[in-house]
Length: 497
Image 1: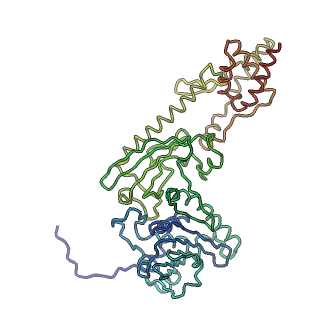
Image 2: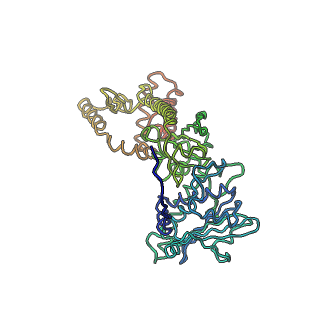
Image 3: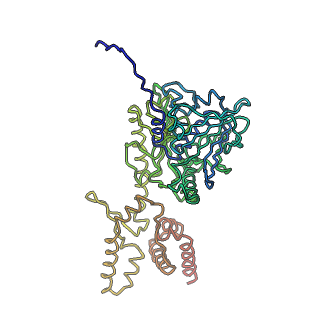
């Protein structure tokens, strides 16, 4: 095909004011914006990062200060240029950047005035983008102030490092531009929500032998390991490695401990605001930095069966294009070549979960274990029916006049037929760990213990076996200390008689 000749060229330089306003709406949240700034600090070899907020003044601000390598004035001006790096260029392994847009687009998404002060080799440089000035001048020109002493938070800058300062926080004030108290409340709420995100996204840097320290208004943030690897009850599968043209993909599956094997604070911290059901799935890391989490990449549904399953995926920054990492570094797409491997990982996880649940189900339907309920599966349906042969029921019915027994068993059947299946399903899908057996009073428990103990002793079972059987079923399991006490009292009474 013959190429068409070009006879003229026309200047299509974008209008500064229009394009830079457009950069504000890429889709950053406060947590992803601050994370993007921290990425730059990590790339600059920072070991200490301070997030400083002033929310109650008439001119609130957010400052991120690091102790990294810093920049010369020439490097700073280049860093302030939108698109300062080619996303196709090869990067060093610890480089968490990609497009050269993060500093600018992340900052503008939250504020209208961005100031960066950097110190390197004893020289301090500063540059300012102010969207109101750009709107007026319509020029790609940054301010280079000579005096930096009056810039907020600049006194936190050490011998080397960088300060990123956000002012004119129009996207964070909650609409309360003239109400200082409510504006501060709105900003502080967003900062509080951001804290957990930072603990999670950078947890591997914070766990290193020489840890990255992130401080929020002087308070050190603790790393949040989504796999609870320090808990001895966590199950970690062997690591797999998938060699691909642009680098290796590392995959490792974890099964979190049951909520009874973890204190409540850690359990809720691990679950996050959306709960364990929404936190299951793949956790994608790029250069140890968490990019995406809580998704199965549409390979399966989030379910109660797999809610404690989390899979770590590690990719190098050389695979950005393969995974379509976006500007915000908060989303990615699964490459087809990796899809088949991850399908097998999911199949293995689901099989393991089903085995665990089936094992628990067998305990429920094992007649020797005295279930209060029978699990009946037939014609593709599952029903739960009270076990009228349970000693507590059978013993009570035996002592009833014959004319009352039928009515008693009818009442038991009505309880089974009235099981609130839909409500149970909804609760299990949301917060299953909050569903617990109802407590029974002392008299009810004593009656059930006495009937069960008599039946089992009548079946010539020794006390050790009886205790083992009863400890495995409710209502005895959930009130085991009281059950043990009642058993001891009954046995003593038998021996004395």
